[in-house]
Image 1 (cartoon, rainbow, N blue to C red):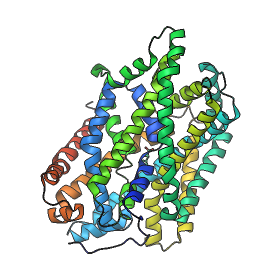
Image 2: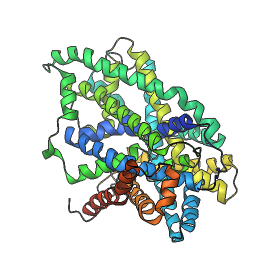
Image 3: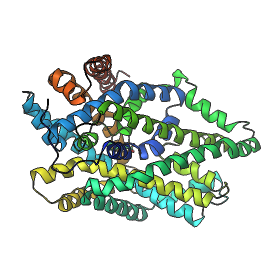
Amino acid sequence: MAERRESLHGQWSGRWAFILAATGSAVGLGNIWKFPYITGDNGGGAFVIVYLVCIALIGIPVMMAEILLGRRGRRSPINTMTHLAEEEGRSPAWKLLGGGGIVAGFLILSFYSVVAGIVLAFFFRTASGVFEGQTADGVGALFGSLLGDPERLLAWHTIFMVMTTVVVARGVRSGLEQLVRYLMPALFILLIVMVGYAMNAEYAAGVARGVDTPFMSGLSFMFNPDFSKLSGDSVLIALGHAFFTLSLGMGAIMVYGSYLPQNTSIARTTITIALMDTVVALLAGLAIFPIVFANGLAPDQSFGLVFKTLPLAFGHMPGGIFFGSLFFLLLAFAAWTSAISLSEPVVAWLVENRSLSRIYAATVVGLITWVLGIASLLSLNVWSGYKIFGMPFIDLADYITANILLPLGGLLIAIFVGWKMKKESVADELAIKQTRAFDLWYVVIRYLSPIAIAIVLYLKIFKVI
Ligand code: PHE
């Protein structure tokens, strides 16, 4: 039996508090902004299938592993890894897993905040009614003018970073639990309303343009696989997105796991979180693609897909100002709860190792991220001509973190839990009696997950695919 440790930063009030917080971390821009656009860019159905397979065979098992590490270590990721490596008689270098996660966290949060700022701006725009009756070109132009205005983007990025820093400074428990309790269900309901709208009203818009059934076109785009559209890059992006969307591989879920009460079942909890996250992403796709087809737009609009399509629907639906502003507001909240989890690993570490107060630590982290975010923000306009590896900085920050650093973090987590920890420690922490389910998971985390991640990364890095 493990000794019953408790984190210095407090604990969740129970299983549901953890589920809400971890779902708050998982559900965010990744589901509603990124998933639809990478699905659009990578040809639809086949990509969605690879993504779902990655969630089931890699995401869920690695999430269980990451939570169990956090709960066993009961500290920030760097200190958890140092401590567990020592406890298991392994090299202290394992703490690099926590350190790498912090680098990834800074990079992700810096561009995440810029995109979340755009969501905030869209909340105000929708509420002001500028999208009423707009054409697709009109909405596209409004989006373009925002991207081309660094001062405006900076203002929104600043507001979002301040919001994040304030909650992190207050402490995850008091700050976050309350926030997530109502937001997640509300966002969920609103997405269902949007899918309902996409099913009905878009039909009429589509008929007017000669597309009989935009909803069916959307559905078939998302679920009818055409494997010829799948490139090696698509496979890597699907894998990377499984990590990104479940907040895996950089310590966010590990640090949340460190606040998890001892008697909670990690397996059941993980499956609940992953299911909710996946359903939200699929609903977002089902709301967006019918609008794309009904309006004769191309699905591969990258970064701008959500911002160019949903306002178009809001501009034409009854109550569009209300539903539209509510939607962007809730999306900003969802981004907020994810951003909070992105900074928690490093803030917890600063509090533990540098004895900083939470307020001070959160402010330092907020400032560093804010400065980094400026590079992302300028790469959308003033610096858009400068490309690194053929990408503007913001795309590069996203690509490197989601598709390289997070899967690498996940690979190391799988190796540590599958090979470096004693099987008894693992079984003890999961508290699953030696059942078939445990054995199956153990085989997956030892062999299947790490080998699959390693193959995709290897092929990609050596440009085989
Ligand atoms: N999962 C979040 C989203 O989908 C992003 C995130 C990634 C949060 C990594 C924490 C850690 O929006």
